[in-house]
Picture 1: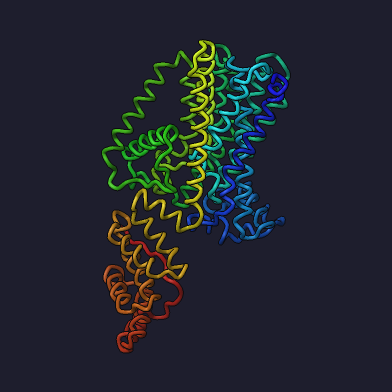
Picture 2: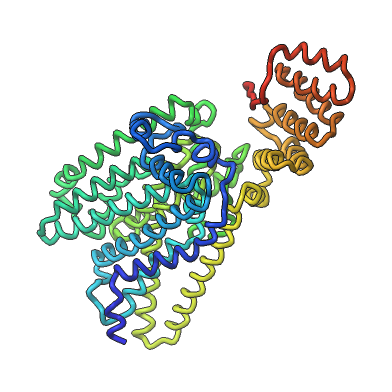
Length: 543
């Protein structure tokens, strides 16, 4: 038995965790693309369809789809080179990247727990510590919140950023440990810095990593103390410089493209409420991953429950602050909170209230802490000769099995566009979701289903969508038209024209009237349309 235990090195445990994650996510290989961002990132993205000097120059010097993330575009271009538009290859790459990341979490757990004095990879006479590392990697790797990051092709940027960010963190932990022992650690520092730079080229969300490194200096390594603060800050200057540069670039690009929501439209009071609610939901889903949707939209108007959850989140922050002298809990909270700051509503872009993919990095520290807590409980129960130790092991195994089952089930909702939007509708029957599923049904020739979804969208339209509801009438009119229900198509076209008399609308109504044999009315509409031709676009008018 001892011989077997001695073989349980962190490296082999990391390999086991990576293999288990790959097995759990194998169903992703049967998933296709969805019509949410995948068309822009892959299907209709001509930029990734070449691997030459012009391509590499463009991804580093130009912006594609608002963001500057050259490594993400290069990885997608490599997939296209080998797989074309076969989604299997893109999903396989995501799975492999995530598996490697789960292995990195094992190594990070080893460094952190050793630094905290709660474990040592050289302690080969007990299976508790190897089991702790295994549990830490699996709690993070197969948690249902990881599904969106791994199974959605567009989130290549998430798993790729995770690879470099976790690598950077790992090398920094090695550096800090060697520094504390007075050993040479310059190579580890350089590796950490380079990997941090690469992470920013995959996705800008890792800009907060320098702050997380300072947290690690404070606890568990105890490097952040009086007299040492200035040297540690000087040590982080290259990290902060890259982070600041990336932050400036991101703000500039999103401002220039009007991608960020203005404070005039989305005031600070609402941003605080949405951010507080998001923080509460991230905690809830981390503990009880039930009700995970592909899209969680900001409710209109902002409901009172957002205020309640914000107060709870604020209370947690205050409570953690009062425990600052204990260091462990505040450090854990900061490692959870800091990676979430760039994606909270204070810097809102789009209309999402929160998203499970944003927990990819924030969940690392809680997963390691949970594994250590469970291991500590097991050790105490075992020392007391308590039979409940075996029950604890059984509960952990059952919990991991439940996580894996939930993850596989959630992967099924990403199988195609229909399952994607159906899942979103089942959890939140939003008019936007009905509209998007209706567009998919229309593209597949299922016109009656499209009509039903557009009807639901029209009935449920609020806010921005209600102001521009004429677009929904046009979409439903086109579905009626394609189904041969010309009279109903004319009614919808007429309703849209009454709200927004665009020349394109007269042209399509003229076509429907012509199909009904009403040639005079059709000619009048063609005359109003002028020389307008081509597909109808989504038009907007001010509230």
